[in-house]
Amino acid sequence: QVQLVESGGGLVQAGGSLRLSCAASGSIFSISTMGWYRQAPGKQREWVASITSGGITNYADSVKGRFTISRDNSKNTVYLQMNSLKPEEKAVYYCNTHPYGRWDRPSGSWGQGTQVTVSS
Image (tube, rainbow, N blue to C red; front, side, top):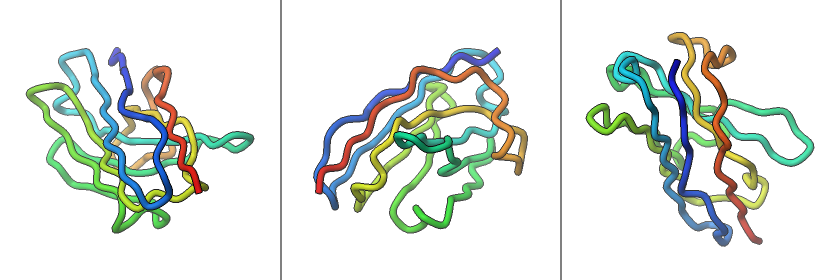
């Protein structure tokens, strides 16, 4: 099973940028669709973006044009570049695998996540 470790979170002002990383263990990473998710205080976890093994990307409407997901299979790592951050995007950000096209079915074990705080 893939194990996931997120990093790169922090405190940023509104309008600022952060780049998150998710390091994955396991030989199946290169063939796995990977997704980023986030959970704001008091809210359910929500899907943010995904990237297939072949590099096809999908984004939640709320982040289109501002966030970019990418991956480096040689490093077993997936990234999330976040630009023009908004205060309401304060959340713990997680990565996970999911079946192709089914970001509503994250299938791996959740890591500890990385905290993103956006000040206004």
